[in-house]
Image (cartoon, rainbow, N blue to C red; front, side, top):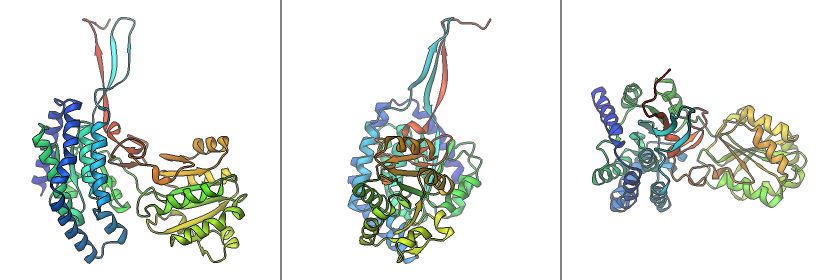
Length: 416
């Protein structure tokens, strides 16, 4: 196993160096061709996915993870659309980030370059295979994919399709690779490849992310969880407040930017709570409330201390009444995970104070937390959403998978 993983690492390093010879147009053309290749392998892909889903269900995999594993027609179209969108994005490589000419005529520029080799470790979601391949390739990086064992058959069909497209379009061999051996040993060996891998990106549950970040010397771009909050300010309009809250929670409960905690200003609680309770009851969402909330809605289950720090990824929502903007912000900064937090208000100044004060990668004003992602931000596909502050924060798209180099151009300039 060790020899196999080292071989993959060496191949990725060579491919990364070879990618520098390709233009942005070349890379974009290959990514665009991946969308058509998916249609060619659709039958084999869906059959492999049925096997994976069946086996995952029989093995007792948690419901939300099984749901993430499924490739529906909507997910298939999503994968195709994201490939198309990424192919059309501006080339993130070779951008002059800043530059100037010194008084002595020396031209100095800071220019974007690929990171090099990126390892992506993920659970359940097969669309990560196509997203990661396209985003890494768009930024001129080689990628090593290591999906979960529960989705191995699906991921291999997808990866082989991406690899075939690279071969057909002159992309260096091994620019896209996938680890085909299940089990923890391959992950352990991958984490040791600090000589060949520049960045690791884990996507999955907290145990996976913690194991990766604590088990390697390779830099890691990560987020542990999405404890997403929505604060309904005192002036929040009822229709908007209910619509944004329900969409944030219910559009898809098993994802990291789904709403987990709802904060309601005491000044509007009597006005908004009845409509909110009816709306969430209609969606079969279990509400758990603080003492003030339960005093107004006695039928609501009591929230425990554990509820404020739990990412449910399920139809459960914790509700708290807060005394103004300051308490809402303090609560979010204390219990939140820095992923996505939002406010509903008509007051521009209140919104501005919220945006300045909340320490989150994405802050939503009068918009669903479910919009905090690469596609809805106009970034095409992303490799993940980072709650780190170095190197990337928020949705991680092609621009975030670049570094930079300094280039100084003279005409025989010498140091005095």
